[in-house]
Image (tube, rainbow, N blue to C red; front, top):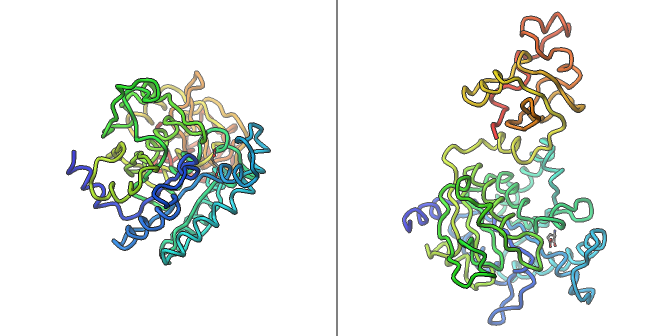
Length: 375
Ligand code: GLU
């Protein structure tokens, strides 16, 4: 186990460190706040040739403090307004801490919708990888003015998994106010034991193990494990650890057993397939017959028009769509070569008939297997 952990940490060259609201809002330890601690620990990592991007929550928490509110607002528009106040303070804190340590940060505000567009995803990737090349630490937050997903549910956990694919990181470190994943809810059971390792995130029984939430952030352990699952499918390891423990990043890279380590999946998805599975927003669905479903699931085939029974939604060629069985249950998703309008005409047909019906043929397949992800 120790060697396994050491191997993963040694190999990790590009890292996403996600900092939760409960860490940002925690009081300083030994006179050093989280920003100062991150600046010196991340700088030390950079000196070993590693590249680090931060995904940070805390805009609402700092906005609450700045405006002297008693608590985090409940109404979403109020949270958004408070986040707009706090985002400046958040960046100012990162900026001054990293400047003092001789480095630079850059503010990057993103939404899941931005990353759902392949073009914007690639634009964001270009900016982020250029920042990393310059040795600058991007500090990513959700653009709370235009999106409410993370302030409703996730405390940026989901965003951190998308960022892992976005910059093609090999390690995601989620810093929260909990020590890791436990076998029981540690807030309820005093004998709960921390799990050091989750070998297979898909078969670890996470639904049973997750339940506890912290109070300041929206994301509990469940959304952190979900982020670890997405990262694992991209071939990245995840460590969920306690960000309120001084020196936690250094401890992790010294090979100490801090937090819970989730191993990456061996059959990782390519960045493009990961984008199809987790970043893209499907805009329609095709109903697939049992034979074609079987061919996609167990034979790794492409989806042909002959296997499609019906189509639902309005989409253009090049958009991501759900593949569902006759009961409407999704089993795959992929990039469609044809629009919903065209599929309506060619569903159920043999490839040879396409030209007759459409007057042209772009591709034999509606979804090529290279653009298809089985879920
Ligand atoms: N983007 C929000 C923030 O920075 C996210 C998280 C939350 O506190 O729920 O505060």
